[in-house]
Amino acid sequence: MRILDNKASYELARCSRVFNLHRPKHFPRAIIDATCVDDVVAGVKLAIQQNCQVAVRSGGHSIFVWSLQNDSLLVDLGNWKEIVVETGPFIAKVTSSVTKGRVEQPAQSLWSHVPSWTLPRRRPWGIFAPWWSRLELSKLGWACERVIAVEVVTAQGELLLCNEKQNEELCWAARGSGPRTCRSAPPLNTADSHSFRVFPAIVTRFHLQLLPYLSAGFLSSTYVYPSALYRQAFGWIQSIVPEADEDTEIVMIAFYLDSEHDICLKLHL
Image (tube, rainbow, N blue to C red; front, side, top):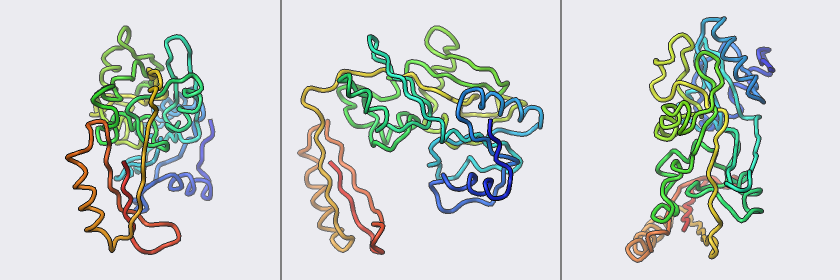
């Protein structure tokens, strides 16, 4: 377990993987760079000894930057990336910082894929978020329905496997708790697990059911427009919605190009 508490490494670890540039002036007591389950268990037990809360960061995409809490111990899972794809039942066991793109590489070699988990850079918590789970929904269902088990560390530092046969209440809670399950989230109170209203544990590994790859594959198109053409672009995208089939995901996003100062519009089908 590597604890980052000297000034230089601490500040880098505090903010370097936070997606939101508006970083709150909140300072954990220390930051743990967790690269295995033993690090997570040790971190929780250290927080119990120090009588402080535990915050956790996985993807770092929390808009509210919940991973930064005063007087807490931050467990950062960002450098812990493990993927195991099992044949037969076709199950992918992935840690919470692994992106979809990295899971798809070994999965596609077996002609399988993770359904309804869009965007290659998304991490497993994204499969709980309805706004990222629409692709293939009518045919394959919600992505969270493909979570068959989770491995968690509780507020008491206990490692549990949760599925439909054991610790099933935590398995169902994980599937239904939404996108805050294991990414940056409100801190876990090690003295009272019930104080964490969303999920009373840190998810360290997801067990995901893979499905056979669709014979027709997946098709996508992306169009980029300058913001000056907003009305034309938005009018066009609205005009095709009524005629698009139910399996087509249509997204329009405003963003800045790295080399430009003007806002651009990305239309993805």
